[in-house]
Image (cartoon, rainbow, N blue to C red; front, side, top):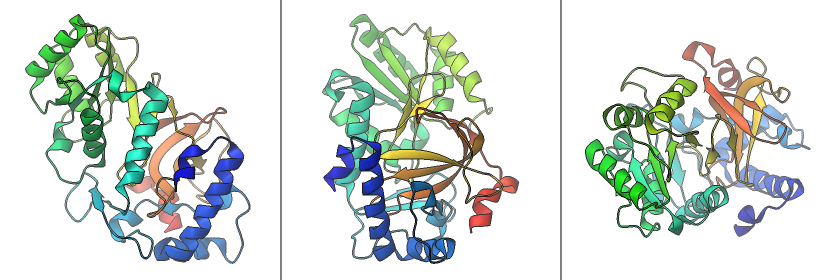
Length: 320
């Protein structure tokens, strides 16, 4: 459905959104059964009337529309049996989504050398992040582009070489590995953008995002650290170019639900649970209530403030 990626206005988004909602109600048995309980026979009139499926369903159920083949299964990190499974029936939609989003935020992939420091993702099967970065590397056309796993010295030498040659570079890195690189091989980066993808859990001390970015900025003499917001259950990324403020491509929208009343939404600038409409999730489920906390701003940008802890996932538990 190419028109997903040709959205030009709020009206375009709304029209396609309701078209996909109706498709989901006809062909997605898990989502339609859940929605019928929430809607109680009413038809949704506005986007916030559409039911958002709690993200935990991806751990417990096979979320896919009837009649669709399974081309790939993306798995979240976590112990086996407690992983989210995203059944992807058309990888071409995912490729189009992440390539177009990258182009919107950063321009032509061919202009960049793409470096990857994602050891824990690389070492396991089924990572949607690795699939994306691997594809970006293949399309980057720089011989230095690639995965560096735990080889911080080689990565540091590559960064130095690219800096001397003033080549535009993007380094995708998981938080704990970027901290290791910063401690062991600090250097001034002028031509390099660092995009952190989260993730220090279980690897080293947990840092607030602001603390993490401050350490990285000091070690690499950078004014800003970029971030990527995506997840196993989504096929579209949001990007922050600094200050922890994320923007999304036109086919993805963020809403903030009330933590105590998950069918209600809070005002702009108020903290609540992050709900996502990702139209690229055409054949799984585009309407998802995540377990992340955040704020939405007037221009549609948003910030991510953390996650509900297990004792406080009232929003999702009430929905289930």
